[in-house]
Length: 202
Image (cartoon, rainbow, N blue to C red; front, side):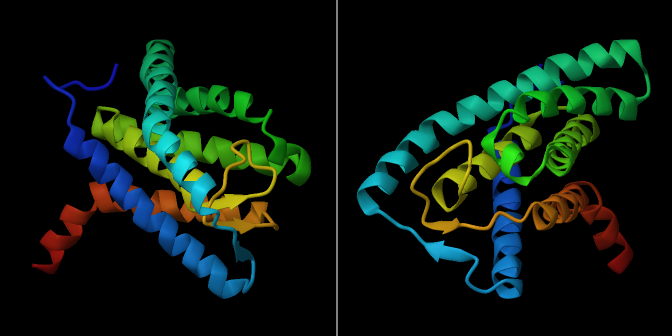
C-alpha cells in the first residue's frame, strides 16, 4: 500500500514534508505582500503549545491514513478498472474531495471553488504517488500541509479551529486555488524534473 520497495523510506517522507513546508511559507509570504494585514498575530502560548504537541503526534497519523486509503487502496483499485493513470488519479481525487465538502469553509466560500481546490490537491498527491511509485512523498506533503494550517497559519471557519501563530480572517478561495496549482507544480518539478535541469545546465 505504501511502497514498492523493501522498506518505507522515512527520509523520503521528511523530504516531502520539508519541500512542501518551504513552498507553503513562500506562498503565505507572497500573499502577505500582496494583501497586507490579511494575516494577524493570534499567538496564545499556552494553547499553541498544547495544540502543537497534539498536531505533531496526530497529524502524521491522520494524513498517512488518508494517503493509504485514497492514494494507496483506491488508486490501485481504480488502476484495475482503467489502465490510464490519469483516469485512476482523477477518480480517487473525486472521492477524496467528497468528504471534504462537509468542511465549514465550503459553506462560507462556495462549493464549486472549494471542490476544485480539494480535487486539485487530491490529484496532485495522486500524481506524485504514481510518479514516485510509492506514498512517502505524498504522506510528507499532506502532513506538512495540515500541520502548517494547524500550528502556523490558521483561518476562520477552518475544520481544525486551533490557536495558530497567525490567523487570517479573510480566507481567499481564489488565491488558495491558484496557490495549490502553482505549489503542486513546483513540488512536482523539484522532485521529478530537477535532475534534468541540472544535467542541461552542466
